[in-house]
Image (cartoon, rainbow, N blue to C red; front, side, top):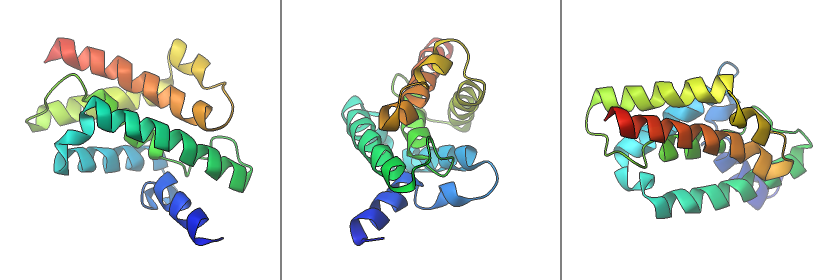
Length: 146
């Protein structure tokens, strides 16, 4: 693997957290939450747009490299979904962060309704879209709760 592929893999796996054997999506979501706590601007629409575009490209490259569709090691989609979850509220306490995290994980794991359908897309968009949808639904619920 060349340097570009290594960097891509490092980002796709959420700084290698996605390589954790059990619950990589949950650990990836925790990375997203930690990044959001440290850098609150990441829930701005401009930052979200950048991570969605970059994440889609990164996921596509990782799928091309491994040949594995929606590899569980890829967690940049969970990170983007967490950022989206907090796009409509300004989290400022533990309850906000916990609620958003739990909402996102429930929608990401169970994939009700339209979330499941968008997962059928191929490549990078297919990896990212279900988490984007889970994040958007979570964001709307967070907006009405808080």
